[in-house]
Amino acid sequence: MATFPVINLEKLNGPERSRTMDKINDACENWGFFQVLNHGIPHDFLDTVERLTKEHYKKCMEQRFKELVASKALEGLQAEVTDMDWESTFFIRHLPQSNVTEIPDLTDEYRNMMKEFAVKLENLAEELLDLLCENLGLEKGYLKKAFNGSKGPTFGTKVSNYPPCPTPDKIKGLRAHTDAGGIILLFQDPIVGGLQILKNGEWVDVPPMRHSFVINLGDQLEVISNGRYRSVEHRVMTQTQGSRMSIASFYNPGSDAIIYPAPAVVENEAEEKKEWYPKFVFEDYMKLYAGMKFQAKEPRFEAMKATATA
Ligand SMILES: [Fe+2]
Image (cartoon, rainbow, N blue to C red):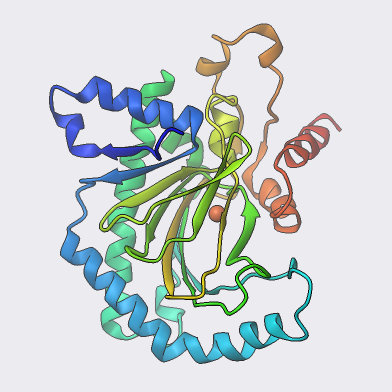
C-alpha cells in the first residue's frame, strides 16, 4: 500500500518545486490528506503549545472529562457506544472575531500563545490555499476570495485530548466523518496516534510526526474543485495507553460566502461532470451539517442542490 503523503514545503523554494507541487496535487486528488514538514512555524514554538495544552488538560479538563464523558460512556457498557465520542475539547474562535479572551481557565501565557498560534496558522492556511489554486489552474488568491464573504473567512481551533480508554473496542475517540469546511491544519500528538483515514475502503493510520502538520480538505474544497479534490472520511481510535493531544484549526468560508464549483475548473470538465455540485451559502450548509456530521456527505450535497432548485 502507498505510504501516507509527506510534503517537505522547503522544497518549493528549489529545483524540486514542480515535483513537490505534483506530490501535493496527488495527495489532494487521492488522499484528501497530507502531512507537511518545514512549514516555517518554529519548532520550539510548537513545543511550547504542546506543553501548555497538556498542562491545561491536566489542570482544567481532566476531572471534567472523567465526570461528564468517561462515567457516561462506561455506564452499563455492553454494545459499542455510537452516540458519543471519547474526547475532551474546547473551541477557540479567531475570525471573524476572536473569543480567546472569553475562554475560562486559560493562563495568560497559554492565551497569548494561542493568539500567536492562530496568526501563524492563518498565514500557513492561506499559503496552502494558493498552492492548491496553482495546482487547480485557478488564479492566485482565488480560494481565499471564494471563502471571503462580507466579513472574511471563519477561522477557529478545536483543542482536543483523547485520554486512555479502558474499552477501546467499544467507543471511538471521534466517530467517522468528513470535515464540512475549507482547509484543516492539525497539530497532533508526536507520540500517541489514533487518527485514521478511509482510503479505498480501508482505514489507514496517519502516523504521528513531531513538528509536522496534518492537512486535510473539507467539503467546500470538494465543491469548489468540482470533485477533483475530495474531503475524506476520518476518525480517531481510542487506546488503552497514553493521552493523545490534537489541535485542529479550521480555515472555513465566511458565513455568507457563496460556494460553487470554480468556473475555471468546470470549463475543462466533461459535460456530465458539470452539474454535480450545488451552489449555496456556506451558513446554510453548516446548518445542515450540524445534524448530519456523522453521515455521508453525498446526501448533504443533494439536499443543498434541492434547496437551490426549489
Ligand atoms: Fe474532522
